[in-house]
Image 1 (tube, helix red, strand yellow):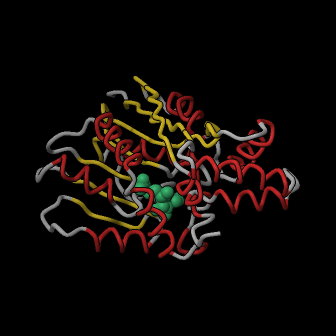
Image 2 (cartoon, helix red, strand yellow):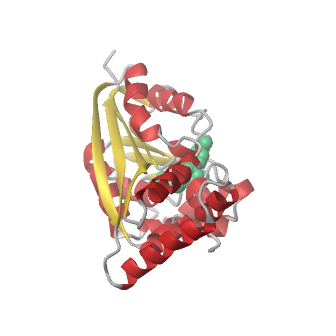
Length: 273
Ligand SMILES: C[S@@+](CC[C@H](N)C(=O)[O-])C[C@H]1O[C@@H](n2cnc3c(N)ncnc32)[C@H](O)[C@@H]1O
């Protein structure tokens, strides 16, 4: 079991609950994958920012996306990355090599941010809402900060959408469901369109994005730790879990392994007043 085994599930307060260095390594491992980079590029296109835009990246992590967006808005724009974790903000600042990049990083809680109403043309957040105590409050905060006519965009993975092969469908299904249920807000992606409508956002679109992963990626996502927990919880027997693991390891060894998961990009527009 790796040191990052539970990070995919417990990002809601990494300074207190996880070793920040492990969190940095975990996020770097994911962000350096082609899969995540393609998803981020899609979110840039859907966000629709241009020269001069003012953008908030809430729950910015290491600031990788924040810096990419800053390149799109040019010198007359401004991009602010906010994160609850002081260590993430410190690392984001350390990695910002170009002093001319119009980007800044601040510590803050997405539920209550210290900016006036209508501060940004666009507010974005990726892989954050699944960890939050109160996603409705956080969304309402992003809507408050978006100017009329501006855009709100979120990306969240849907863990229940895992397509994984195995020798016994019932075992695979119950273990995927168990894995999903370890998250604080496991169905937030599919709930967000209703929450967007409830916040009065218009032109709401949902863009599904699927990515293929290999067994080492699943290990990074904490597969083995979750399977151990499932055995302890009595959800599956040790022999069921071991049979599935042997099946997947053999598939990986013979080049037949694939795991597909779908995430959702939800975008909406704040109506002009
Ligand atoms: C999985 S990381 C995603 C980071 C980044 N958005 C990305 O896509 O690479 C989740 C981030 O959300 C931050 N976070 C969690 N709860 C938060 C909150 N209440 N307010 C602000 N940031 C939060 C964590 O500290 C962590 O950096």
